[in-house]
Each structure stands twice: as structure tokens, then as C-alpha cells.
Length: 385
Image (cartoon, rainbow, N blue to C red):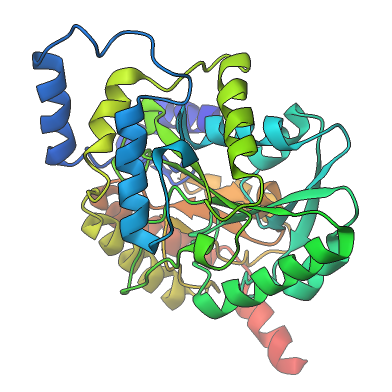
């Protein structure tokens, strides 16, 4: 889709192609981060470019721990934290630590597709656990997927691709199911909370702290979205101080950080983000984009669940074949991604992490696309049923 987008832009011009494919945040980092980075670049240089412990600068890890205490009041220390090369780096070092060949990791669909490849990287097997029609995790479905080889479950809230934020009741029920499953198989199942979109929410939605619901949990995050640093690859991993094997897991992740080739997260970025944990990009433009697209798609008859966070919409396709719909959209110079790529056919994902100007300019193209789809016929069929 990226290559096709470039081809269409070369033919029609970049202003006439509406690329909703990539979750590539376009908002600049907040001023506080820029100021901190400038202070570091203009300050003393004797120490900040040297080798450090593989888990990251100790003072940075302590600052992350202080922020985690502020968020959820667990007894965090810097020893619970590993600074990582983004959330992708964090997931890989954790999976390398947890998995033996043939171990299973449950992923909730629809899912971020790279989970499958990360799990396979380390000899694991990805097990698809579908959420319900409202993209809510179901404890009974979870229990049906657990075997003696289950080692972890990955949960992603706010979710990519749906934007779904799991509420406290849903997390409580899911955690109960996970505890039951762990007891049944005789070893802890780790709950891996991948949450790079945690600070990007709408309509006064607040993301619950997953570590307060389940002891054997690990937070994975990056600052790609909340600080607009997607290309800088900086994040962290934090193992709950209540986890049974927390120190062993941290030791394994620290070692894996080196053996997988990351060694450590970039020094100057660690130091910069450590003082920006309560800062985020201005999400108002994302909110306006969401409102514009929601209003238009709803008026045109598309069915979707309004996202509580992230910057994605995941509507149902008005055609049976989601790939066919994506190709039809391309004929109107609209680029979106088929839901089958995320483990949920019959949907499409669009990212509204683009300029407000381009969202507004795309609205007539969405109207033309709707006119070419059999949405009205589908509504009649439902009425007849």
C-alpha cells in the first residue's frame, strides 16, 4: 500500500491522494521535549555518550519508576524497568526471555500483525483469540485457547487497529479468567500490556492501569505516539513488582537487550524522555479528524465502533471481500488497509494521523466511494431478514 500510494501520488499529485494507511504520527513533539533535548545537546558532554548498563541509565529508570508510582501506586523501583528501542524492541526482548521453542502466546484479534512475527522470532506459536463484535476480550474464549504451553497473553489498549479501550469491568473479568487459566495449568501466564497509545484518548476516556488488575503483568510502551517520536525508537519495559519472577524476567530482558543487538536504548533519548513522562502531544487535531471522519462515514452508512483512543477507525466493509473494497477505495485515491491483515476480515483500517486539511479534502472522495458500494442493498437484505 505504501508503494501504491507513492505511485498514485506521482500520477495525481500528493494533494489528490488520501493516504490513511500508516499510523505515522505527523504532529511535532511537544515543546518540553524539544527544550530538554536542546539542553542536553548544549550541556556537558563528558558522560551522556558513553557506555551504560544494558538496561539503561539508572537515573532514567528511577524517573520512570516514579512516574509509574504516580500512575498506579505500586512499589515500583528502577530495577523493574528496562529502557528499550521502542515497543518493538521491548516486545522482542521480553518474548526472547519468556519463550521456549513451542511455547504459545495468545493474541487478541483483531491484532497488530507484527505480534505474530515477533512471537515466531523466538520459537513461539501465536494463538488467535477473537474478541467479540464490539472488540471486547471474552474470558471464556480465552480459557478455551489456553494449553499447558501457554506462556503469555498480549493485550493492546487503546487497540491498533480498532481504537478500543478496555474498561475496568472488562479488564477485571479478563484478569479473573487469566488467573483461573494460570491455576489450571500450574504456572503463571504473563499478561503483556502493549500500550503506546495510552495517552491518546477521546471523549474523556481514561485507560485503566492493567497492572492493578493482574500481578504477573508487564507494561510495554514507546514514545512514538505520545511524544511524536516514531522515528527515534525509544520506549521501555516495566515488569510489575508484584510478578512472581519479576527480577528473573528483568535479568533475562537485560541480557536479551544485548544479545538481540539492541545493547541499550539511545542514550540522549533516554535522558530526554525521562523528564517528559507527564507530557504528550496536543491531541486536539486527532480529535477533530476523528469527528470529521466519524460524521462523514456515519452519514454515508458505514458501520463502526467509535474509538476511545489511538488514531484508527475500523469500520465494517460494505462489500463481503475487504480486499475488494480496499481496491475500490483506491480507485477514488483513498488508501486504507484490509481488516484481514489484522485478523478480522470484513473490516478496513484507516489512520487519521494525518493533517486536518487532508482529512477535510478527502470527504468528497468518501462520498463518491459510498455511491459505488452496495451499502443500501445490504441494509435492505438486513431488513428482509
